Length: 114
Image (cartoon, rainbow, N blue to C red; front, side, top):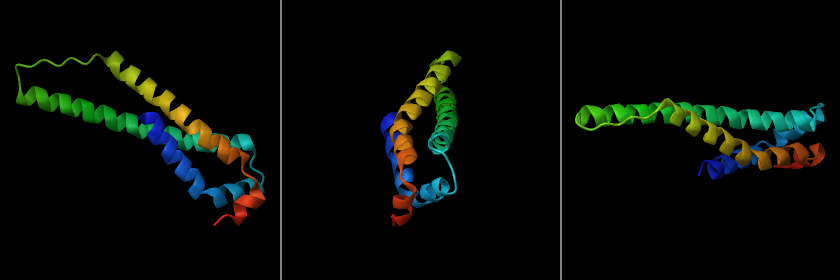
């Protein structure tokens, strides 16, 4: 799910910013710089999602334990690390195609795009 959400989000971002990407390429940005820019933005989205997911999980666990004190719910820290790593890999894979598409855009064609 993470892969598809990031793919669609980043792809939409690239399509909406076609003109901006064309301007950046027109003033000398390399393909690698555009590629890195798109991946960096996807990384920020992933970091925000990881933090929010961690907080919601911890808050939900605390709420359940408060409402049902006899229940036990142990979440080892390594599980959070695995989840964060999986989200990071999913983000990278999901952002790869849109980042390559953005890097390959022709500056002249991008400036004509409306």
